[in-house]
Figure 1 (tube, rainbow, N blue to C red):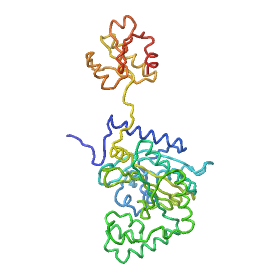
Figure 2 (figure 1 turned 60 degrees about the vertical axis):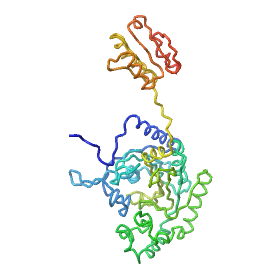
Figure 3 (figure 1 turned 90 degrees about the vertical axis):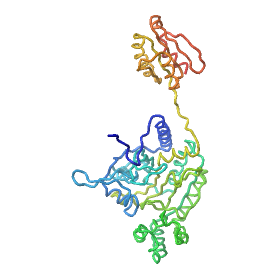
Figure 4 (figure 1 turned 90 degrees about the horizontal axis):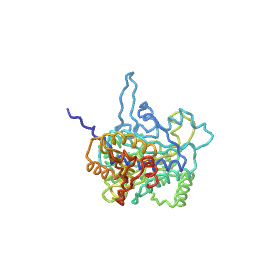
Length: 422
């Protein structure tokens, strides 16, 4: 029987995985500069965490979660996103008690959603995200957006668009919710069943519906910006001022609501403007979630974060035709000829590696010409040839593959020669 990979998943093979490592390393470097610390949470959690933390009216909870019962009948869910787990850990491990706040965390790991697979979207996908918990300051909102934009810029993406919106505080959202119900209710029967269910649960989510996006009531729906109270307006204006100070361009879209129930005040998405990227242009999204920590059983602690798909970032790089500057060569390939030389090459290659040099040798008993071809495929900077005669003289012939120069080197000084010649 021939086994195949499950639909919506992928094998990331050598040659491609290096691109992932490059992006992930850039993310870690940026987080160090911004002082975000890594957190690693379980891949599965109790289902109730996501129902409460993500929101029962969301598509994620209603349609997309991988949920099962364990052997004791407990409902378990593979994590569909990273914020709920991070906040759960923040509460459970009492990170709010640390003297330095806000608590700034990041994660990189697989998430799972039962969605229709398409370009850059999988059922198992890798998400990088950050969470800053414990501050009401709009400056931290600007910092979170800045980190996201800087990551995309640092890997070479150019065609980006930042969309922002304010969802207001509890008072503003309540007024807007009532206005949306009054607007949609008389003709809600013309909308899909999901929108009909959302009318009373969370009418803001109707604006996020893809199926009914062309309905005339969508265009005339009351904007959240019309219902922001003085505090919410002031918060949003301060955020926009900070983004301007950071030289970050943005557009305000009053219809941007995001797909999760816990957002308030700041909401944002970063999109790709690259031609041919696909119908779904969103690369990253995030926002403020004041109240989520309390919902999960913690103290009052406001938060903001974002998440981005590594798959979609790489797809955007492909759409822009940009190749990452990956290190694909090795330092030295050792060619061994004869049994004694082959035996000695085992320790020589190990000595190179112990010295921090990338090295390889033949394990298939190939002829000299074939070993040189192998060195070419690995883009070796140097090829070291060791035969029986060289071994007796305690020397090794080193060829610089860029210049073609050959040098006889004492085996005792071989490692230092390669180090100095790099």
